[in-house]
Image 1: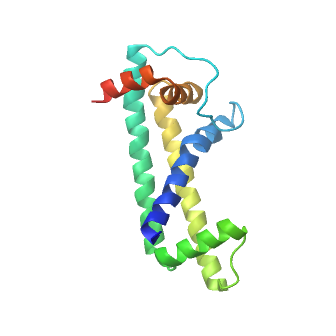
Image 2 (image 1 turned 135 degrees about the vertical axis):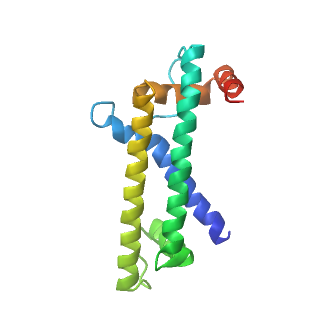
Length: 165
């Protein structure tokens, strides 16, 4: 596996966190704890007007995600560590749950500074996504419910696809 595919996996993992934990983070001020699961206990009703509004909001949320991904990639490639060393440290830390012994104190600081920067970027993206969802007239829980329903209900996914054409 080459470095660019590993970086893509790190980015995808970040997006999964944004899509699930991001909305759960916003809910922590008043919603249910924990991220939304893809499984839903019962089907929901989504009218055509709401689904059209959802499609627009979803597009806006995806635009924010793309911006985060580009910012993440730029931060990693422009960091003093560089993409290759960042990924080496990242993989080692994920496996051993601590920084590897061959990381100098300078690299450890650079790594932690970069992680802190990326987490700040992620929080900002989460806040923008929540604001977008609310601006478009959804509660975070309703938007999450529709996301889950689109994943679980083929007819709803087909309707959404038709709207997004």
